[in-house]
Length: 579
Image 1 (cartoon, one colour):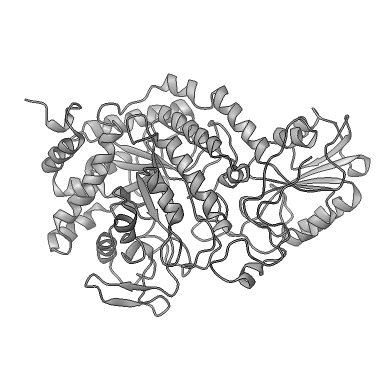
Image 2 (cartoon, rainbow, N blue to C red):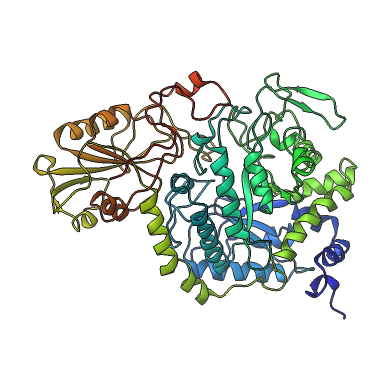
């Protein structure tokens, strides 16, 4: 039997796409339109049900015809590589042998936020994106993207569900873009520069066999500026994900072009359903011809009003009609979903044409061919162990951590000298003992070093943490809120204290600022990085990538659409001291 044209690497990509598309059944096409979460067993074998997901790996790939999956959880490097090979072998045994495109949330920094990112684990550790913005070095960001690419390729990740970019204030949702974690801060100009660099690092000059496809999240709609999206498209970004929210005060239109209502009257729809708000501008204004993947949960997610994930004011629609509206709006793929039978029924009923499905499947197959997955779907577990967390990558990340630290205040405390008696809270005693004499009682200390992490209120969807008004809390501390703040302030009054606050997003810190002998912001950094800077062994270069407000109501006072303009912030955008 002759080799099918789609398996011939010497043919142009478009010819291979058309040949494969012509061989696919409707069910196989529908399977491509879903980007579905998977977990694996710790030993690298496929999970076949019984966990948090309602389906097994074999069922998903062989019966559902899904070939785009998203790995959740943290696992060993060798085990992940072996799992990827088993998954790809399972796909290779299907009728057409379409390889799996595997995606991941960020895995290179310190935040472990379900649905958003994983703490670094075996991968090289870097600052969060706000820390890279604090450095403001596009060349460094491109090297970071290249590091992510090389480590991801080693274990088989071919799509990065990042960068997450929401610069400035969001006219559509009322949120301040810098308040959302995992972004490059509040400057649209700097964001655009760093987005270009990051996408270049992940994908190279063009998408190819040594690329990791970037998925820009979350594309704004409504009144938001498209400038960061333009930067991503200009760099060749392969995928875009709509902003997971409802627009405020915008009009959605039904498929006949008639206004469907204004959000708030029960009939308006979110960006994932609205062509006017989202997908219309992408090909028409920006020339984007890549893949549009919806935010997780668009079809079947939580329905809590105001939550970023869920049915986006479409609660009165059937599951099938939600899927149809998203396809009408220009979506190519449903993130976090696994119901291809819905698309099959939409085509059979005549609600969606098979030609419309084919248009999205072409884009999805084109990406697979460009990534070289049909020729190289398997990875080498030995090579993966050598590459992930390699000394070269670890050293680059460690240097970036030190550079990103931002000195907010210094009342003649820094740099520390000699070997002082140190009382530490939130800092490893073993690490601190390399710099001073660690004491158990703060009254016996010359200096205290206190690390705090900005607290977040729990949200029902556990996807994007929100920052409540108030003070920071210490990791692992049983005390909460006001009680913890009293403990912190008592320490600051008792001994000169260096306070380091992890800023995944802006915090409200007036009481701590008033009492700390020195205040440093980090965006994901080790204890060693902090103490190297504190003792003058490394230079902190960071400048605030967003302003810090005096009180939680400051954004409301500034009004919508105006980033970094709350009148008299506690610390303005770009603040940072030298020592």
